[in-house]
Length: 111
Image (cartoon, rainbow, N blue to C red; front, side, top):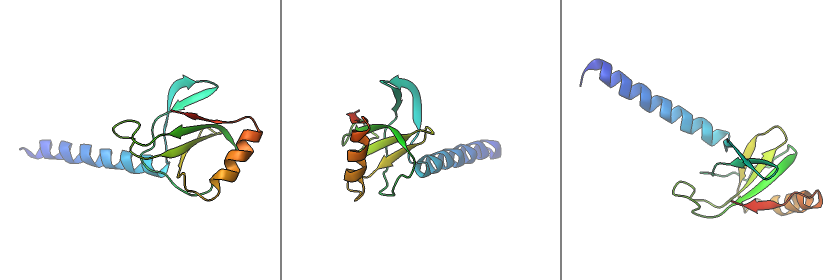
């Protein structure tokens, strides 16, 4: 392989690693597809039990092994600022938050 080809392979791999790393830290990326009153999210590949402080405008439930790359079960929260978070179903604060969302008319929809 020539030097320039090796550089292309290294740059491509580095870019892919950076994109995957950033995607994991933002917990979730949304797509532009519409789903009921908001956006239909892509799947979660990892989740967090960290508390979500922002107001939530939509909630989804990702079943285990939904697609080949969606191998975890998670609750997906879409906030009013359009940030999306993958929440671990065993998060201690989650049941109370789901009750508060239900009182506001926000129910989690299955993906």
